[in-house]
Image 1 (cartoon, rainbow, N blue to C red):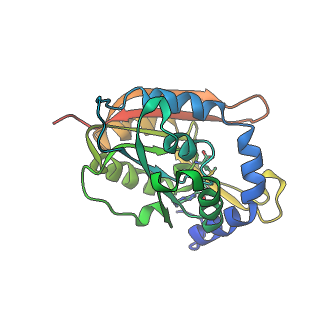
Image 2: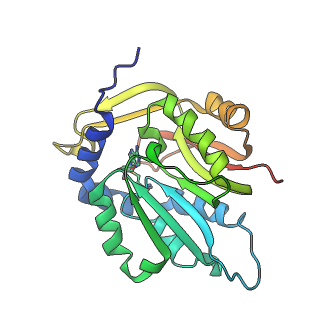
Image 3: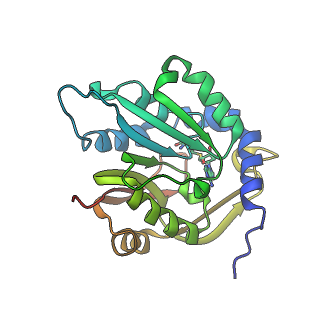
Length: 231
Ligand SMILES: C[S@@+](CC[C@H](N)C(=O)[O-])C[C@H]1O[C@@H](n2cnc3c(N)ncnc32)[C@H](O)[C@@H]1O
């Protein structure tokens, strides 16, 4: 039996709306793994000389765009990219819009629950979701990975991180020391998650490794890069 609250998404939205400035200050100092894995993803994206159409990238749970949306929208490695950036927190979306104003033509912002999104099959060259899928109940994580597999173009790639351990539900009342920082995480653990990505979603796992966070964060996440089958 699940014990997470029926208003889980509303509670998470309200928490991230409240803690956005604290989270963003904290995350700026903890960006190195994200940058490292994003580079690995970018190296797998198709390159053609003229690139008349920007590559289409979806980001789920983008926060205020630090550092992923901002990197993607800034033509990394000379790649023209259009980012569809989703987040549950309207405060984070507003902060992201202000921060990325110089790249406004490169980002479409989609506020709301990522489980409410719907795209045509084969819409994206790549999808990124960092430290965000962990906030979905794990049954929803399975459904989402199946959708991601469909939303990717043939040969498209996804970068996502998950809980490294089997955690049905973990909650904390005051995450990052914030009075309004109630938080929820969930995951199947590394081995089961990788099996589900391969067997359930039908993606090819390019990379799947559990990595300990930086010194002052006592957690390890499963980092996955996976590929949709080519036609
Ligand atoms: C830990 S932050 C990560 C933000 C950013 N991806 C990063 O790497 O710093 C988690 C983000 O996921 C968002 N989020 C949580 N549940 C979500 C959901 N169901 N749909 C969309 N975004 C969600 C939160 O609002 C928050 O901005």
